[in-house]
Image (cartoon, rainbow, N blue to C red; front, side, top):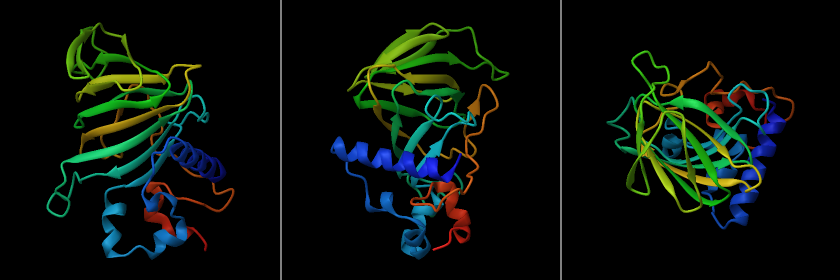
Length: 231
């Protein structure tokens, strides 16, 4: 992805959250200068991947296949003594018609909550022992109510509705075209997207950024490369 695209996506997200009266914390607007000034008191932000996460999943077409994520809070897989928090919370913005590819998590249990905007359709499978699609019914909870979905079946979340997804459950989703951008919240167990995603097909979870213009904001994968951003 190009840096100019990432800049524009984040600006779009900030404008959308302000329009929806969903204020973000101050570090949502930090650029390289502010991140370079971050000290030990801000260490948790970097260590636990708080902030922006933009991906097109290697598609090269963010508008069609992609996701905008802002992580508010998260614990740590690897350093539970320093960061004992057992939960994570994220804002997920799905553009009208945008698709999230099939994947599951080995460890993460998550609630996906439609907080407003358009409708979201999810398609579900269990995974089998070889991590392929299983031809078995999928048991999920929608708004706390258990329901059984046939393999490859759909669940539609309208604003206000939520679904609980368990480890090993393949899911894909799409913002239903014509219903508008979808504002989702994810509440989950501790999450590390670098190691806890199993995609059905090989795709790129973390984008390689082409620096075609200066970064206005950073994504979490930039934190380990702050020196490359000239200020």
